[in-house]
Image (cartoon, rainbow, N blue to C red; front, side, top):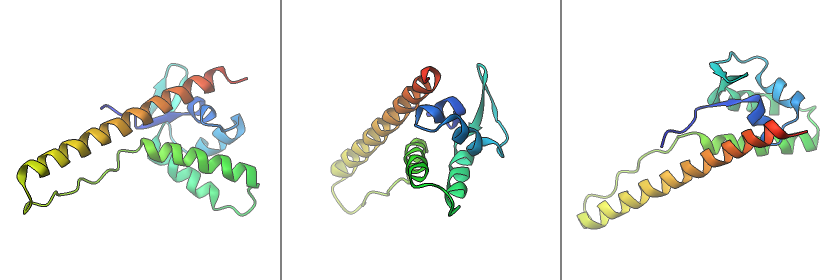
Length: 128
């Protein structure tokens, strides 16, 4: 799967951020490109920015919950899966089957994360 490693302010709005929150999360970041009329930001940079913003003690409870929801959605999109070495002392057929199953589960998780990102983009575009 070719998973997107960037996000836009529109997509952040689709995940539930207000226009102001999307701007605050990305105002210190350098855009890595453009997608149509929107700047794109590196996913890891946006995640770090949200984590840094959440450290502030003055954030309202509702805003904190919204940012944590967005953070969880963005973390799901990261491809940070560590491959587990399957035990070599067991049956080789079982090891191969387990590895294939693990790969399929990872592919499905990536597909769902991409689909959620696309839905968030569409919500952000058409959000009033």
